[in-house]
Length: 252
Ligand SMILES: Nc1ccn([C@@H]2O[C@H](COP(=O)(O)O)[C@@H](O)[C@H]2O)c(=O)n1
Image (cartoon, rainbow, N blue to C red; front, side):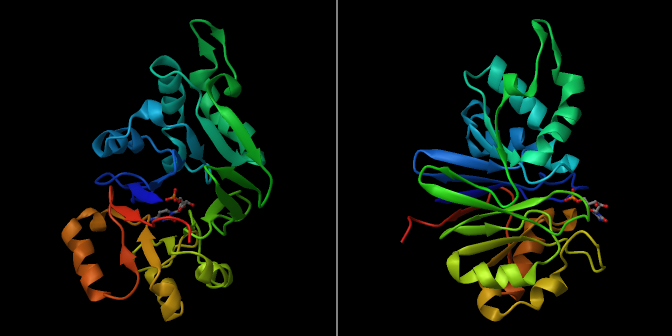
């Protein structure tokens, strides 16, 4: 399995792409979230937008979904098939409410969500299978009252999505995965909906060793700043960069 960050930035990032990851495995793939910056990132990486067939949506903050309209149109106008959207069942209608002002009316008449996407609604804690890999979803602790999901694909990776640190869950799953991708805002302050570096530093060494940081602010769009951070953390908590790939090999 090859994992490539299409973006590692937070909500306010303008110097790097918003957080999203492409997982390629077997003869298929999954893109986690679809910010508008993915169009540029995919081009830079060399993966055609028309080749995007599977997308998982973690939650509905704009920086995670503001490329979904473009993807739907692009797949229909330039491509030849609808992308599958894996999404919590309670987010389907709210997502269409966001998309419909720009997608409902077309020159060929009115359209619904299912004209653009093959929607796969997932129950709380639901899972789905692609290319022989099982992806398990779980609720994250992002904003109270708001549905937000993380993703886990054993024995490959854990993806926190947007979340405060769910220490119990992370420590429990750590032995089952090769890498833990965790959001980290990297500000020297407390943000109630996100995880700080101080939080992650509390994890046991064997968990920190597997942990890769994503979804941070633009100061770390600078590769040298990230390199300096990684040099200071030779054995743990390394920062990923946009378009950086991680090869996890085959299932053992
Ligand atoms: N500097 C920041 C950035 C974001 N927030 C809060 O995070 C939520 C949005 O999360 P994104 O993953 O979309 O970045 C939202 O609740 C913001 O209020 C913040 O408090 N400070």
